[in-house]
Image 1 (spheres, one colour):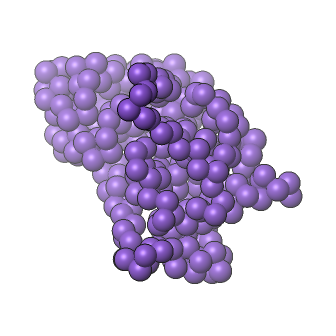
Image 2 (tube, one colour):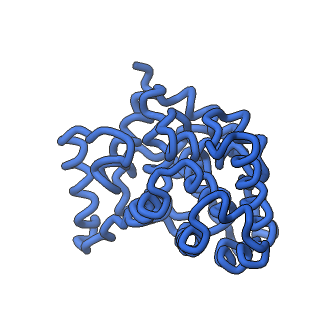
Length: 265
């Protein structure tokens, strides 16, 4: 196994061991990796208890969507440029009031807007989820398409959203790349890319296909808990020894802030 792939797999295994011990879709990691990661989780290098991993977001997401393909699709559309916590609230509100594609299609647009208000850009998203519901019902007999190209033909569905549906609804190997995955992959030195699309392509070449399902969930949880955009908690990180630490440092003399990658959809 080439060293770069071996390092990539070890990074993934250590993150999984740290944040969950087991991924939602993957297998248990080895005991030795888990124990090593646990030692980093429970105590920092200063002897201060570290943050306890908080993986409730994915458990809550699964509880709301039930891994139902339509709900996964709509929830992921609502998640674009939004915080997970706000997306969860919007998803719960929407499906509590309008639990089916028919209900969403036939509801007044203003009602949908109010239900998903916390998702951000709620007027645009309301139009999208209503149109998606209509298309799913009228063109696909109420069944969410099971392929990338068809999914990406739906309003507001780009590669990230389509990949999330493939992974979390259909358990099909794919690597959805959001801001966390893009940041961690580059910060660790696994890839050197400028866009989520480039990151996805690089990661699918780096990781064997049977590990693709693990990457998004593990990297997202790690990005939310430890490898944060600003002030990453390196002394609590289970992959510190494996990380290139490509951390952006903005000084007082900095006049420009680097543009964020286009993570829409």
